[in-house]
Image 1 (cartoon, rainbow, N blue to C red):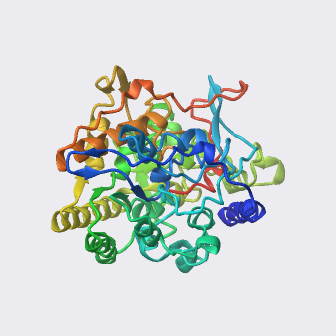
Image 2: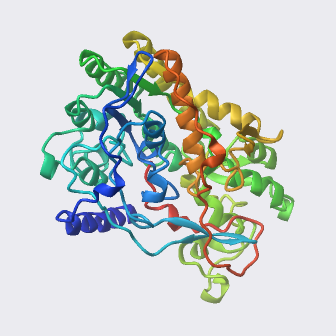
Image 3: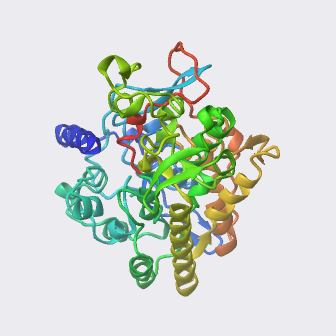
Length: 476
């Protein structure tokens, strides 16, 4: 797996830098912190995964981390918030815009480095890219996290952020409690369904079991409640509301000559029916969802390229004696790959998992008296407004559309800097209500856009030009 190669490279970076010097000038000077209403924000800690960490466009880097919702909240309440800073352009694989017209993605080949590995206490931002709900309780390093236990893939972000080789404190939850927090935000569970969905239901072949999820989440919540820590939790957005799943299918529906050779529609491999067929209406309305990884295949639809082309990038396989009679994506013998599509059955499985997880989160929040942020409802509302002018925040219209919508970064999953500010405001609204506080909301228009342009590229395509390999190291 190429993700293993990427994570191995990240291991090397971390090992080389474990003796690096601190960079305290990036940390807010400690303060007693204000008390707002019934809340004390003196020691605020954020537990979560990549969104909590401030991960954007395929990697973790300082100019995105500084706009993580946790860091933005800490600024609004004037308290310190230690973060595991990574210098730009991040730990490899950062996605940038290579060209606007035609649109193409550029992968920045450079890498940044961690700059405060020797910070002497646990970080306040404990979000670990790739973390599942299991990991908050149990993962302490790259080789005892869920991805390693269940798939044999170590996740060195646990070593980078938890630093147990030096601190020897334990999991995200253990480290959070070590800080004696006066407030915790907890947003976890996205990866328990996203791993299934982003792989087209192939790896893993199912989301986390709903009963196991509820038990694990209750374990986290109960531990925090026993420690008498005020907590605000957030629920999980539906996959149907993020551009990783809502971009390529509609493009195909509007651009593909569906009458080519009498083709009835997109023929695809399916985990439930072996072969399925999606017409343009299904693709346009989300009856089936094509992942953003499929963008590099979309322009090949209906072409007599054969499997050899897809595997090797050969423009004219006939010169090698390859059968060119089967039309890619329109033939049972040469179907669209299963890993690049969510059919209706897989969408139902993903949505049912999200509903079950959100039910468990809501139940735990009610039982333990936690504040609850309905991120799922917010994202669904924005999605519904996509084609009616968008949703306005501080004079800026946002949609969930890829690139142009402004809400998501270039990987199609993680929020942009402004998206993080919108999320931070939703947390602040709940905090103000829950704690009778008066925390000012963030003016989203003051947050810079986070789409980085590279040099102009030549070419022409009716589709977003996004090589599938740019997503191979993506974590959630």
